[in-house]
Length: 99
Image 1 (cartoon, rainbow, N blue to C red):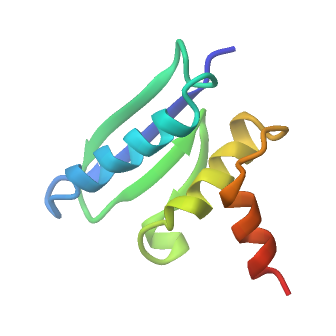
Image 2 (image 1 turned 135 degrees about the horizontal axis):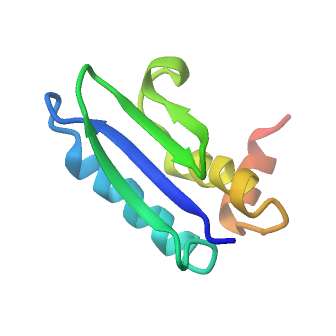
């Protein structure tokens, strides 16, 4: 089953470059999982910045308090589309941050 990433961003806030960078990072990290699905940028308004993996919202600027740290975002996306996948440096960073 092909997976998809959707980045919804606010055009009023000029967050398209940030959204494109997030999509690029997801395509680079999850290229095999996103084959046949891909990453999509979705323009919005009202300060929105949300990221969806398949249909699950994995980040919301409003609910999660700002923009995502890319390592944390990769872990959240991985948990939805490829839970068995190891992320190397991202997993090590999470273990190091846990007391």
